[in-house]
Picture (tube, rainbow, N blue to C red):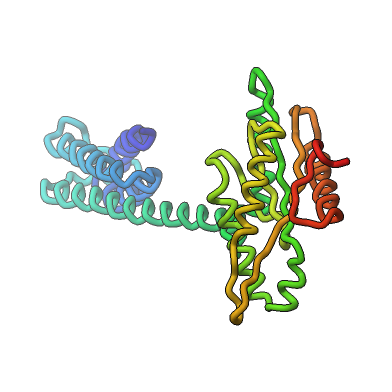
Length: 287
């Protein structure tokens, strides 16, 4: 508790400048500044109590002539018991009040910063992470992979909603947004806690699967593809069904370039589109 030592130092300094002067000038400013150093609202009670005790103790020692009157600024004036009592209460109270205000402002700013960070890392439409957040988590996962005694593969699943432009053109962007939100919901319910989905851009979504071999990644991709295909959207008395194409690639070593691996998933996604869409392509079936 560094403020404790600062209060002791302030008390000594206050003694050297005279009881009255220190209480009404140095005392108030010092206790307020020191209480502001602590952002813990509970610690503010301790700090205020300590300020009152130290300053009243110094006043009593001067009053009962245990310590001589000293004032390096102006002629020394002996304090009265009433001035000691009132000044100590005012000092402690001011220290406590300012601590509560400062700590409340600090935690409000902290919460605001956390909310702003969440906004910056989240896709506003679908509520899942965005590209920036994906790369942040990818770096963390690659570092974890590098520290592992037996490096594990990281699978990338790149999804693209089929014929999405025609959905926007024929039904409007509101329906297109609804389809994007529903697909993001499928991702959330189909993945493990450690998996990381993100909106890659437009109608593309990228999913990171830590510690997942190719066969396991294919199972997950097929689950998401079939679940999304089974959804039906009621629009103007008609039923709209959508599908998605998927490209899968694996980052097998921390020495590999993740962007190169993601580009490979993009190549496989393109192959899936060329083959008629609504399918999964990986190293196993690229030819």
